[in-house]
Length: 358
Image (cartoon, rainbow, N blue to C red):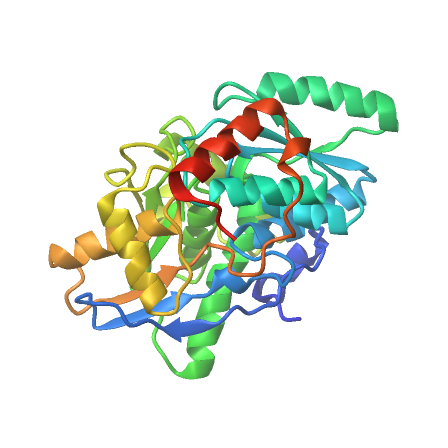
């Protein structure tokens, strides 16, 4: 399976990778009522047959590293309805690694309870915490698993965002360039993508910068500022570029200022996972166009795209919407009674407000 990063910078083949994804994901026309001259969608909802979405590209490298190190379990983080936490549980379990997830509270939403039911079916070991910072609980779990297994568990940061995870999206930018070249089409001028921990957006921006093209990445923040901010983006950039250049000295010595990256913060409120009327309208438009979307991540990115179109920003532009959602079938639901009490109560609250989602 082609991996453009490895082909362009052969030294990066030293990076650990467990193939999870069906690459390249489709690059398709998208019909929405916006002012762009050309609108396309990158179907990363189809990254992996077991469970798609943008996390699978990151997990290829992260789980490859965990297996290389001989780990027996993984620990990761997210909100109650985190697609990243579920994707990690799905792909870690398939790799023979025991999944542990530290989950933080979020407002009830239409899809979060379905995610928790899937965790119950998978047998994910869930550790609920009171706030966004799960580091103390992770330290406790890490010590416990190390004593049990005789080897440390592999810790995957929230969103799979570190240098290895972001590298999966450096490759994704190069993948788009290859697809455009093969189809005889131009590269997009602007990319809209949801930014939870900003690793996907930074990886894309690095990839386009390596190509020396002016493609602008509009990273639409969907998480609190302490999780996703410019300082975090700068840190991820530094670590990712250092990793790539350590593998292959021919990787250009970019500066953070070389990235065409805009962090859009005006669509976050009223908070994580809270659907606004504008978000719901954007999601419905995408679904009508045959593109899967939801209200926490992709809906916010689409909301930004629609807002920019209404403001005339996209007149004549070549735009790409990056669909980071999972459209593959969900893992079979398990018994809610197996979840920790606080999550049983949360599922009941979601069901009462939104009904049970299949």
